Each structure stands twice: as structure tokens, then as C-alpha cells.
Image 1 (cartoon, one colour):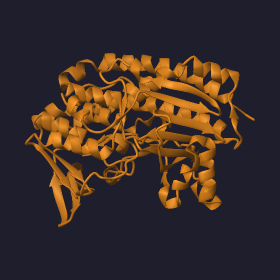
Image 2: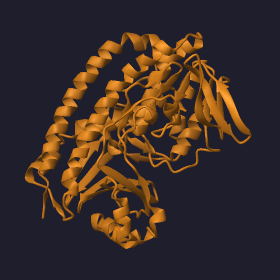
Image 3: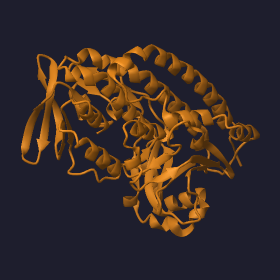
Image 4: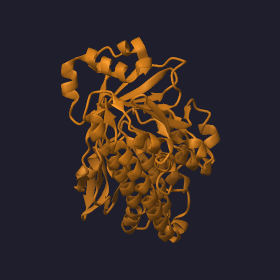
Length: 422
């Protein structure tokens, strides 16, 4: 949707296909990061966007055992919005689509599911689409696959996926929130699990991080045992855990980290989760997808307007975004390493003096602020010409930034290794 808006704003004729009749679904990833808010500011949309109902997350806190500490304070960022906006993703999508419809070259088609790609002389020239009235063929100078980690488009194009492997899954559920509960995003680590509680106003969007492929084993223990685990990690929830009435209230997110070796082929480009599925660690999947869209629009708008063959520009999009993606995924993998120490015992955690020292020194804050808040060298709305001239210096800054935050991440990880169990 962001790419469609940016291309239409540049005068490019663009069609966005959405397989559902609306956007009203539970996406879970309902965070709008400071970097995305900065883009909305650059586009002149921020003031109108912030009129929509949202919650503000100005800091991230965590509790390990009985030790609570601040992971990051977004008010330290140098952006126009020093917070993460928590907003239902359907509201964000509706907002962008309404803004895009102001441009005559924008065409949004609901209940249109792209199922396959069309070829002509080994070049992708459009998509086959399932609609309420039957199958249609839509031709295009360029097809951009934004259809997620199970992308039908990348499968149809036979693009090779590199899996990094992950040790976790997430069990999502809702639980009501009381006025005295913590307001900011809260992660609680104890008893061999991590519980994430995101303030959604009158309820928490909760996620219990568990070992990979352990959901069936958890279900065999029964829903009462699950409620007990949640209450034990977050005692302040009290009797509210009874709101989790059955397994129908608990949704499994099978976590993946992967990326395409090649994000494109003639006539096709993959971005977002279709190009690189992210772990929920740091909550940056949407952030990366929006940044991909901006980079793609900056590089492709002019050649698309000129009706040029865009194939030679697709590699530039991947080069622009791949290093940032690899660094972010590398940090996620590094964070996943900590879960080996979290999962190894079901007893209460007692952080070591080293862990407390590292946490109080805010050594990890540069990682969280950079990765969660703005990303590894964020994108900005700009013309393709400017983008081209700045590529070398941007890559140099990216490498320098990666070295700095990797050093901080390593020190923090050494602190995590020293977690001890009572």
C-alpha cells in the first residue's frame, strides 16, 4: 500500500490487489515506528494520521525474574515523533488507501487474489487473479510481490529461499487491561518463558514466547496449565487469566527468519516478508517492509514513468536494502541465542550481578533505539537521482553502524548468558 501510494504520487499507474474484501483482520503487528512516522511527516500526512486513534509507546521495559529495567527510551531519538504508535493495521491501511485514491493513477482492487504469474519470452508480464466473477489476467510492466512470508508470487517465480532457523514460536492472545497496569510495552522473562504485553488501551495484546514446535505439548497440559503459566509470569494479571477460555483464544505464530537469495527476476520484484521474513524480536517486520517500499519507489518511479525496462533497476533495490536486512536479521538471531538460557529451566530466574550491571548501564539501548526506532540507516522520500548519488556513502554508514551496535549486542548477550536459576 505504501509503495502504491508513493508510485501514484509520482504519476505512475499502479494497481494494488488485495484478496480480502476489506483490511479488517487481526494482523498482530500493529506498530508504526518513528521511522515510518518520519516518512509520513515528509509526505505531509503526519498531522492527519495522528488524528486516528492510537496509543503511544515512549519506552520499552523488561522484567527478568524480579529485576525490572528500561530497554529503550524513544524520547532520545532525533525524529519528529519520539514514540511508537500502536494502531490497528487495518486503520493504517485504510488511511494510506484513502490518501492514494486522491491520485487518478491509483487503482485498489479488493477481493482480487493474485495466484500465479504470467510469462512472455521468459519475462513476467503480469498476474493471474482470482476474483468473485472468475479468473482474470492483469498485465503490468512490473509485478511487485508484497504477499508475505508464504508468498504465492515468489513461489510461482521459483525464487530460492534461504532459511536461517529459529528456536521460538509465539502464542498470541488477548487479556483485559486495568487502569493500574503498566502503560508501556512490557516484556517479562521468568520460569523458562517470555511474556510480551502490549498496551492496546482497554486490553493487552499478549504474546507468550515458547520453544519452537512446543505448542502441541503445551496444549496436552491443558488450558488451565497455560493460564497458570501466564499468571505466574505476570502476577498482577490476577484472575483475568480466566478470560483465556479455550485454545480458540490462543493463536500460534510459527516464527521464521528467511530471505531470498535473489529478490527479483525479469518483470518481478519481491519486498517485505515476501523477500525476507523477520522474527517478532524487536517488532520490526512492518518497519522493514515500509523501508523496502520507499527504496523501491525512489529507484523505480522514474524508469516506470518513462516506460523503461525496469529489470536493470531491480538489482539496485536489492543492493539498497539487503545489507540492512541482513544486519537486522543477524541481530535477531543473536537475540534468539539468549532464549537457550531462558528455556533451559522452568524455575524462577535470578539475574546475575553482571546482567544487572549491563542492564543498568543501558548498553543495549543503542541497539533497541536504532533497530526498533529508525532501522539500520533509514530510507527517506527522495528522487531516484539523489538515491543513486548517495548509495556509496550510505553503505559506508551502514557498515559503521552495524559494527557499533554489534559490539553493544555482544556485551549484552554475555550478560544474558550469566542468567542463573534459583
